Length: 184
Image 1 (tube, one colour):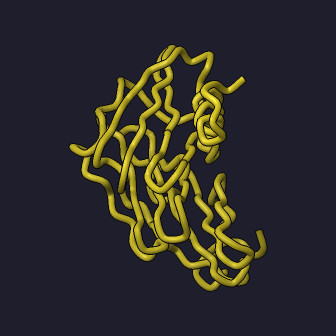
Image 2 (tube, rainbow, N blue to C red):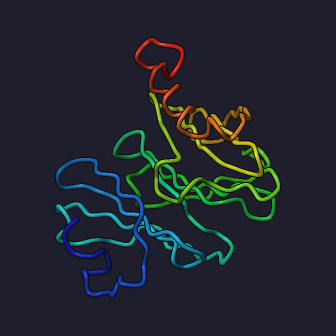
């Protein structure tokens, strides 16, 4: 990553905690800053990092963005730990020009204290044109939520013991794309 994200690169981003970078090409990339409230942000560059534009500025003090992922250059999601028993997911269908919060009634309810692993961008996997797996944790269980078509149109939830965690889910999803059924 070249200069630090910020409007015209003049903003002091030294207090932000960038944990997830998704590159679409050698010129286009997104950078996600994690943290509570206004620390959760998404920036985008279209010139290889010479300039960064703020695309998502979270205002909810309870939201803590953990990761983002993209199906293609136009469609992607960003998600937060649960807030008041509900997941928080933002979606874009226009290359990040706008990010809309997915209505809570289109998402499964969260388990008590459920959040994402690590806030590092490694807890989400995407496949095809409309599937996303989000690895979460709560107590001794890990939940994997599958979504189809524009996040939230249809959901499935499977819980697994946390010892398999997101690694097993991500690896199983990748193996399925290659025609295998297990991660081993």
